[in-house]
Image 1 (tube, helix red, strand yellow):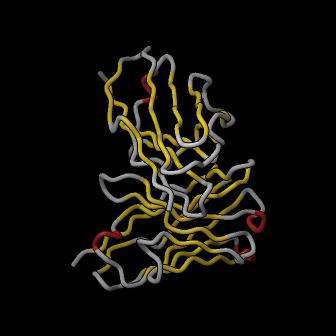
Image 2 (cartoon, rainbow over the protein chains, first blue to last red):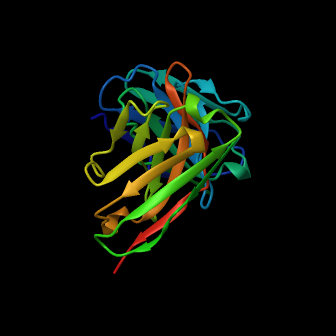
Image 3 (cartoon, helix red, strand yellow):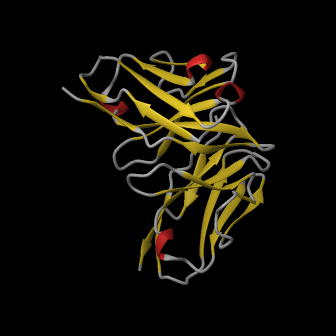
Amino acid sequence: DIQMTQSPSSLSASVGDRVTITCRASQSITNYLNWYQKKPGTAPKVLIYAASSLQTGVPSRFSGSGSGTDFTLTISNLQPEDYATYYCQQTLSPLFTFGPGTKVEIK
Amino acid sequence: VQLVESGGGLVQPGGSLRLSCVVSGFTFSDFGVNWVRQAPGKGLEWVAYISSSSRTIYYADSVKGRFTISRDNAKNSLYLQTNSLRVEDTAVYYCARSIKVGPTMFDYWGQGTLVTVSS
């Protein structure tokens, strides 16, 4: 099975900051990597698919990069509505594993 | 596009529940669908996948042999039969549509149904 890790597990940032979250796969997943945003009481929302493609309707301050085993999600100019938990997910293996999440909190 | 889950509730350990997800706004028979859960205070966990024709099914190791995913394309419905429930199965269960854009992503989700396993 492919295991996913994320770092950091949580971070504090201020409005306007640039935030970077890292995701690592236990083996190469080429670009089979998605990023989701999850807020309490709401359904997850896909932000980035195929490692770097921005989902329709998602603000351009979100971006993704990486391939193989190492990936990053960057939020430039953090906004109040971006405080949430972010999850990476691999879809190369049919067991569509999520990472453990990174909680972005208000500083 | 809408996905609406139902069937959650309180059940004792060892018990069973059948979760349902009714979809609208797209041709259900064209898409694979998944169940994903989130236990209280924990992260997202993918549970199961079923292809558009039901020919391909996958399960997470944590539920294999206890849960069964199925679908009825005529009723635009997805199901998850959960048996031999354990306390650690307590979670909000979401259904999510898969779409292949090269790689696969989950582009539409329901709002979830809560399953509580407790004596």
